[in-house]
Image (tube, rainbow, N blue to C red; front, side, top):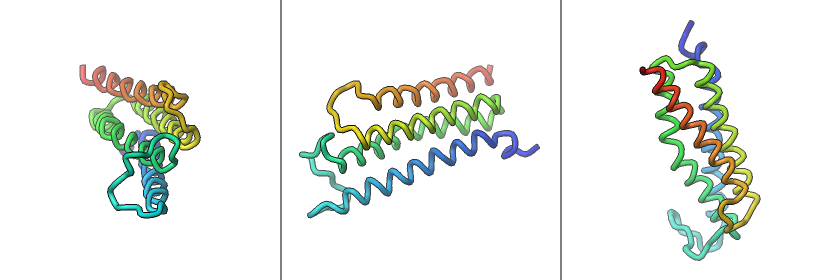
Length: 140
């Protein structure tokens, strides 16, 4: 069996995570560029959660902040031969949580913390921690 066959669930989850990030990038870039007087690489400091431009930018940046640890943990799990089913499950839980986080961030303009999106942020974080734990167990 090939690595792709063994970790097919994990690789499809990673594909969805990367596709979600790409979609967020397009949405953030398009919403910002369509603003009058938009300057590349700069977000207006006066924007807040009431602005979709701000929320789209923060959604993308939040994913960028979370992705390095998840990708590193995912590839570590695959390379050390962690249980393929659990690796795939944790990656998919993260992927689905990030999609719900994105949708709620786009939809709900709130300064309240925690907000409804916080639940899905935490689910994604816990999936990442669980995958890191799986790596630790595999290494022992």
